[in-house]
Length: 367
Image: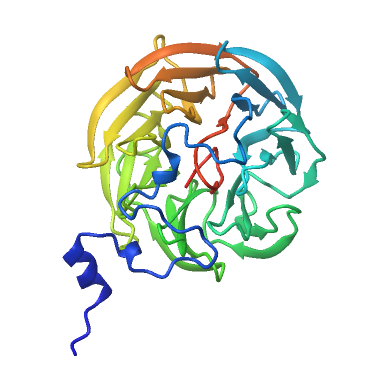
């Protein structure tokens, strides 16, 4: 009997390769092979977070604080002090904790989202960003200045393995649909790296090609709903790189706007929101044909950086990193709603709770 390859089966049934791959051990099964974000539908909250008050957590790097905003009133209701300089507020894999990443002070601070109160700081060197493996086995600390990806216990943050990476500025990541690999971006050397999740081992490295007079600076990264494509924001090239999930290093480029930075999948899984930090806008890309269909501009300009989408899928919240403010957009209307003054240099804000079964980290990559 003739053997049929996995690739042939995928092409025959028009399914992503991940549909035939053996998933990472312990990872919750993908609900829909054509939409890995199926669990993130509007208001599809896990029992773990039901009843949690919806709040927006804004880390202010130069103020060493986290502003807590009521999204119904747009008012700051609480300010949490941190050791030195928080970069991101990250939901844990089990949805029970929000971790404040203070890489200037070398601490991770747990926040109880039920009460919006901070717990005891845990010393972690250079926690610029934080992720979790899809099976919840490890916390993955992006130690940017150390040129390391550090795999840790997801609760105690004890070190399990340290992976030295051959590039500077490693800071953002996303996983393949089967969870077996992840791609991380290296901002300061214009490189992407491919890592084996279970083995915690570097597999491949590729360098982005120069598109402008400035060397590429890859930032946020997201995988498409069908699991077939990675999108990588490039702040210096002013757009997004498009890469097949099964063909690492094969890249094409799409211009979106000056200073392309953050990437967010809308809750209907139809479009990708791209923050253009240097021109004060958000581009909207349609997944079905990789076409830009809209651009939302901030009146008077701004610096949209990192954020996330409300549980009902109606509003996009994003920090204005160099304007000491937060912006709110109405996704359904494609319009700017308001700006809210916060502390100095707000960065990776999250709105919580969000729909989904588990978190891969950052400001809420939910699946």
